[in-house]
Image 1 (cartoon, rainbow, N blue to C red):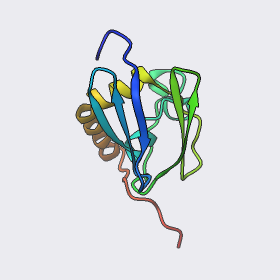
Image 2 (image 1 turned 90 degrees about the horizontal axis):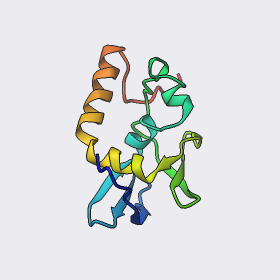
Image 3 (image 1 turned 120 degrees about the horizontal axis):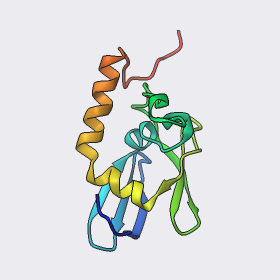
Image 4 (image 1 turned 45 degrees about the vertical axis):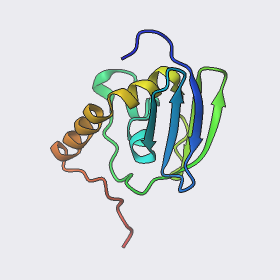
Length: 125
């Protein structure tokens, strides 16, 4: 991960609300899917208050981003279609999610499998 603070020059919610494009001042850019952002939310609800409290969040394959609110000059707070809105995504965390996408996503999928969970939403009935 980059040691120095990297500032975004653009954060754009895609028209289908399924991902955000983030461009940083050094020219790197990432397209981060809503599901990925939701299941790796930095919120206490997902991360817990200690590493052993981290939760694996299943069933978010269909989640969308309904809003993105700025938080000061250091973060955004996305609101997801399932109502989750408590994660503050700092510039550094967004950069990490972009840079480590493959490893973080693979670890998430492995956690789902290990726990017998699915990316699919449970449908009532």
